Image (cartoon, rainbow over all chains, first blue to last red):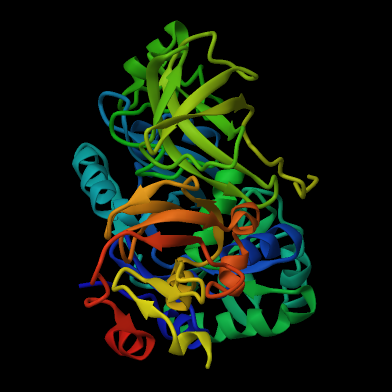
Length: 367
Length: 126
């Protein structure tokens, strides 16, 4: 059975093209992916991301437990702060990537991928046996609305947000009179908020944001543009760019993994070894040098030898070029500025290795 | 007579139009381009290339995916729409006229029996 978010009828009513995604019937686009993409880069867009998972972790050992399941140092996570994390298995491969929020002294919120909720819960419960901890999957109670773009903050202020919120923080807020949790995070490479709200208020809030956002040029944004936006920002997509056979170090996520965390965690040995001694494969960014488009699973060649494969690829509306993420063998010569080839319909097409992100976060908020 | 009264369509969403000079124009239906969404890439065959009915002769890519385009009948390519290659978005604006793909000389016979009139094609989509 395909699941529907509480906003499903809104999407259908707006004429969205609906697709199945991770078991959910979701809007892929309302008008045009490129138009929606540019709306988020230039103004502000509204996304229904209620399919994502919300798992609350609480209890006496909540901190120790979380510190055992992620490479990040949760002891350093301050009240009302958020941190990007991974959930490694014993070999350092990733079961999921997530954001962990500290809501109280003994209370944390995990937001995880829709496609991985079952695997995550299974893994968390299996790892919780020695801990006095409560794991509650409350995904069915909450809707998640993302308001993203350079004008997101102005819109939220107009709608009642009063506090000045830093990036990667979460706070209780009242937007359009509705109590919710406002998190200054997103998956677009733009400034913005993600609003965690009880399902019963989601339809009202959706309509009100679209109405109050008119003066800012707001549009509803589907999963198609969510994908092109995150790709320009080189944010990983679980299932494409991350999986159980890929470690955070291989995935280019070393920046998020502390080198000095004392506590043991799943996969620590492999991950620390890779930090010290390097990896077999690495993630690179590519820009196609002709008009062709590299797609998921296309092969990558270097000096006539097959060296890896594309994990995500598509057009960048901002760069007006085609970009991709690929895993290749960890060869020093395959570095920024080098030319590789992508096999597309039995022909090799040149691509340049470029820095990630492909598009800089232009509207990064000042702290 | 509007173009939709003159074309034949395939179930894989190509259209075929017979021209006054006995060549045929091939393109994608309005339904096809609407379903694809923003078209960002188009690859057309060389002039002179020959294809059998049902063979892949071109590729179209939307933001999300690549799709193959099939020959409605057998033929030899006599013209390709290079404007559409340079600006594939014109397919979204008008796939029947501005966004045509290729012109062919037919090389087979009696190959149109399984093609649908536009009215029947639309009815099949219901």
